[in-house]
Length: 607
Image (tube, rainbow, N blue to C red; front, side):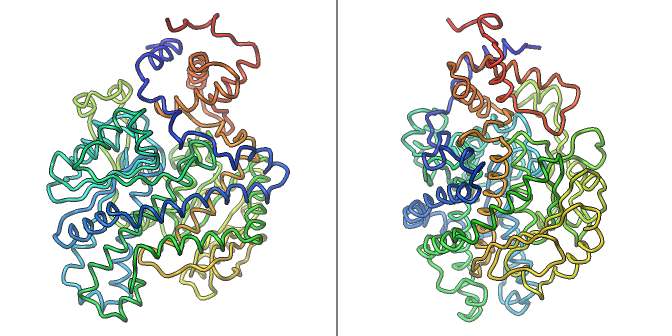
């Protein structure tokens, strides 16, 4: 087994393809350069800084949604669904979660149409088949929705294999989505789709010319004329490299808009104008989306909303500072809450979700549960389909020639493992058995109202389980204020237009939770300036990012920082048990330099 020095040397000599510092999404945004310092003393002003970066998105929406590539995507989705073909959405990390969300939202639309408007559903001759048209594919399968699977992101072979296993065929559509434009797994799915004769789209958030200049695997895709490219570049992220923020938000708007416009074209020939109006599909055009997004930002960025968000950040921070835990309650938008909650683990080096049969690992700082349904029912409501875990034998990884770690110890990613994350209404004493615990109900849109379908069941849960927690709160997003039996209420007031995929509800929630989680972690010292100083380097891209962070924060060159980071990673891996407050290897490496560590005494130099 290679030691830290050998691993660092190997990375420096053989992984230059993962040195991504030239990409704008990896660089700091000038607006948030002093975020950690500002939010520490002026929380509202810190929230405003994070909000300001979202203003970079609308110009990109104007450009992309008016372009021929976007129109081509809309047409391709519509034609594939009508012809009985499938539309694949592939991604990794945040884009993988977005792929899952797009499929779930599509399936939910059809389920609710059948349930709430059976007379309209009956007019659609292929509705049952159309509901099955979307297929989301995330690196590592559905399990990766909870925890990123080490080794998958860096492998184009795994991307090819996973898509082939899903049955992609000629005539299908493959939309490969990667925030940076360089993710090997996603690029593998693009090539696999092209190989079998599918119509392939490549969606990314860095300038095409920058990617072509610096990343060979990206250049090959961008230069392939048979692949349609959608460049969604908006600029650097509010937190350098944190593409779960503006990059994924832009992708959500663009891809959901394409789906809704395709849906409108699909149904227009079967439903009368009044029905289309009822479903939020009448007169829909690509130009509506940038305008609506601008209105949403204007409402979300109102002073009273910035104040409410700042207060919510302080509430969460106070609980975490006392080594406490927070549990969110959600139903319709549990997938959206789950996405933000799980993405905090690698971004800020927090403990990931813990399985129900694991009593030794640290508990995640935040968790999410649905008070209305059991875990198995809740997982079905998350995906709106059966689970798609991965249960490949070691021989598959061997044949694909992937990393030694995957070949020697194939991860358990099957459905049984997913069900061990108890996100349903089963009692979980581990969530309230701490000195300080918070229970936060999250309501969006129609859920906020007095007569919402979920009100009684949510309130019963609050009355029954609320007293077990030391604090209770509600975060509401919508046109009205909530009335719930809780101690604190944080209301984000905004109008949310009707949408087949509930896009505006989801965007308002995403933008709010991104700021809540980022602001909280910044106040807790897990952000330095606008750098994610506690990032967990679990793949090659993050090792590069961690190396650059150590270089910046310790004032050393890239090579020296790489040796220190690998030594810190080895020390972390050697710990018997990860604790609830384990520092990031990046932070440890910086502390090593401050304590006098010198590479001359520990590692060879490059010649």
